[in-house]
Image (cartoon, rainbow, N blue to C red; front, side):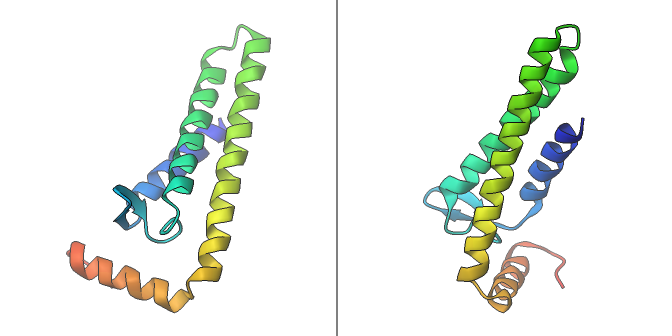
Length: 116
């Protein structure tokens, strides 16, 4: 159940972040700015973990199949978190915090009606 909630939350969270187009794909500018492949791998891992968690919830009368679904849901969630950690560490070393905040403010002024 936790994996289901975590997958939905992380998927929804990254939809709400500011995006920009990099190499003909839309990527969040905060963490995955120069890493569109990592962002797509992150999304695929999130979708696989959500699928595995829902499968484990729906298949409760077959314990071996349920255990398999739980294991691949946990494995894909761990891979999604490791991709996110990798991108965060890379982004943290590449962009100082004040530059990232400046880019967010520019994006908010350009595309949003309310900004801080």
